[in-house]
Image 1 (tube, one colour):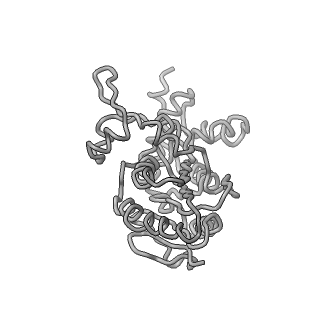
Image 2 (cartoon, rainbow, N blue to C red):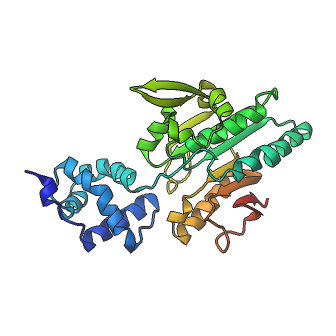
Length: 285
């Protein structure tokens, strides 16, 4: 049977069920206009499963607990948006190397602390955590005694696997200068295509793990200096944002930093952070 010929468009009841399921499991709010996006991203999945239409798919999710449990991660992987670039919103990386790291280094002279812990909480395919790692490495490589670690997480297991491999097509490295490319990546030729793989000194800085930002407590062993959570909370409603900001606050050291994406804000949601400009926030206490 050719399921491509019999595949229906997604009905309103089925969209509402999937919308509620995604909200409950991942905190992502799917507005009504996202219905076509959901349909387009799930069409291939239904064909792969040999399911004729969305009504049958939703019925299996409702009535077959084993299928629902196994399918949930696949559903999340297909619905989540993973747009990312190296050094996206570069002013945040300029803030790290020109303001934050020098202040951290200066403070270490009096408090004796030479550690840095950063959490990239929406790692996607890895461009963001590797951009952080490049910035960290270039600043601290000549400064003895510093212990720097980056934790990079995402809810989507597929993009995390890509991030762990750290191999990118040539066009993905366009925002990276030639000098940084040669320093931090190894050029490869595969079937007449050019790829770049992150070198071991970057990979060793980063620990990748799957984390659902709705699941608390987070699997974090120590307090953090800084959290990147860029272009994520825009998909959450204000109630979920408020809860997440509170949990981030609990994870941060006193006066720790939280960096959001360019279209995101804490205004009217949390008063526990001081706004420093460019969607950079500092914990007040």
